[in-house]
Image (cartoon, rainbow, N blue to C red; front, side, top):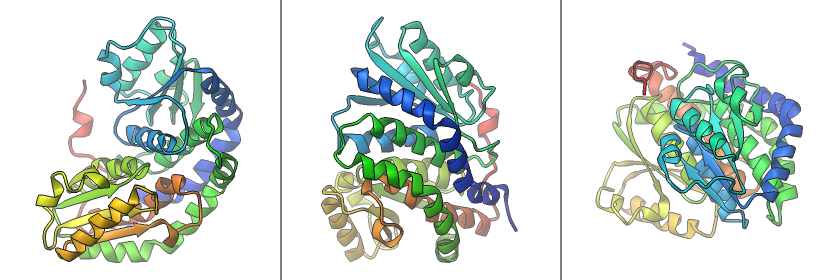
Length: 335
């Protein structure tokens, strides 16, 4: 049986291609504004804030950009904003109507901050009200956990912010970013069966810990919060892998499932200690190594790792009789 999420996963490569074809010139304009700003705010919720976390940490590992991430109402209620400050605020939302994020966009507009919205709905409030709108060209997305809107959002953020950065390898990174649609297209074909089998092995597990370093913490957040919990209806917890020994080390034991990302970042020296310790305890450790999937700049790894894990969550839900794109409670909550 195929669920709607299947079609939306398969649409990811073309969604990326169409977004870059349509929006690259606008992204380049935003990059020029970023170069002149003293501070960059990234604001989002759910899958959208996970893209912000990934890009923030990728930039902090490689550039001098002054960048902060907030969830919608954290930005709205904070008292740090100043009238006329030289900053730029980039808001991410699949629907363009996320109440928290939209309220923050309006607050930023009140303060005279240059606002940019990245959203998938061209007629949405956030696209209409931002000073610079960027529309991801995915067509409507139905599956709650976010596939094509996730990859297009994060790709837009990488393009905008790395083009404005002083990262020494940014030309290579940006060139590889243009190749991501082809890479994802191939990964969708080559990783399905392995991760379907893995999902069948793990279908009866009730909790997963997801650990990553650098930009892969943002992916850990997405996988735990909006893929495993929302899509597969499993308990899950995201962590920076270096935080393993502050808490999780006391819960890691035989047969506890852990998904861990390893990109050979400097900080992944600690990640590998976590992997070794967990293997010695006979925990159920799923390690994803970037070198096994693609030859790209390590900072782009969230765009690579997400594909096999989409298959994992898709089939994990299926083997438990769940539609991975459906919701039980989210649509009933308004605030």
